[in-house]
Length: 165
Image (cartoon, rainbow, N blue to C red):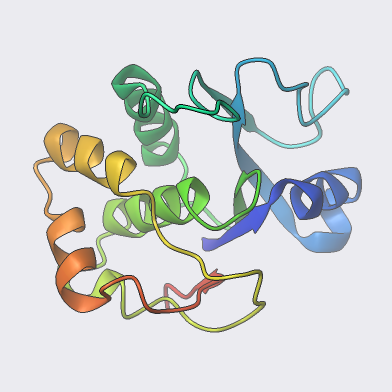
């Protein structure tokens, strides 16, 4: 499955025409008070909406571990399927990128290669995986994603398509 990390506006557009974009599943990362990404019931593709209590707050308290766990379980069921998985957060540069790295890990990409698989595809600012999400994922998965991110990338890279081929 191809994995894409995008912003909320791009995700919303792709959800309107899933066949046109080859979209087969979406992980939506939003604040508790944000409206749903899809008004359709049921949504046009399998959709998991993760609601973080700290998104959009002036003084974030950090991501909820139980919500990260929910996202990991949902991804675990889908990452080895066929098609295109879109992961979005508001800006498409932090939480979505962290969950995309988790998805690659769940696909079996070696930890020491995950952050090298980030390629320059479509630039929207400077994407940087959310370190808090990576730390929680490491605790839940027994992985070392945060360590490899800090060592390999030092926060200086651009990302959009996460190639898994």
